[in-house]
Image 1 (cartoon, helix red, strand yellow):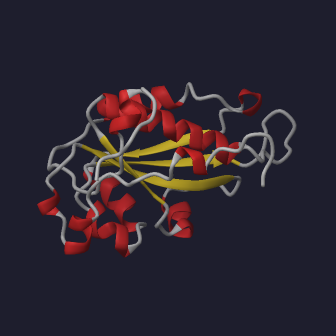
Image 2 (cartoon, one colour):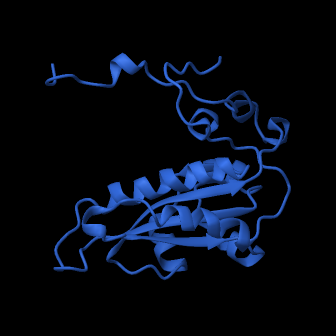
Length: 189
């Protein structure tokens, strides 16, 4: 089923989705850095820029990143040629108080990153299914950072390369709720 856009929005938004089938093609640091460059220009509360991006594109880095994934994600993400982990600082640098907006801000940075990836011809798939404690240990992440997501990055592969029928059946853009169901005019009813 095709997605239905009511308005003429950015092509990168129209075309972006979260595939799981990756082409067997390496990704370099030079491929990943423009994505991080785009993400760093995302807006943030008090311009805190609470995000950090841990990249993996070399074999040892990839193996470490894969080792923290849950089996359900590792099943397909083992073929991903690169990963980006997003973490965000929990406290403001300005006053040492809790930054309640850091996850929101890092999520905005992820959105920027995903659209730049689409523009560059890459696919991205963000995952929440990973072992946070193990990730914190293996990547030496301080306790004052939240570990938010691991993103698989690469080129779109053939769905036939996915290891299960279920994954092959799900390899298509997801549908969205109707516009009328997600906006509120005046007040919540």
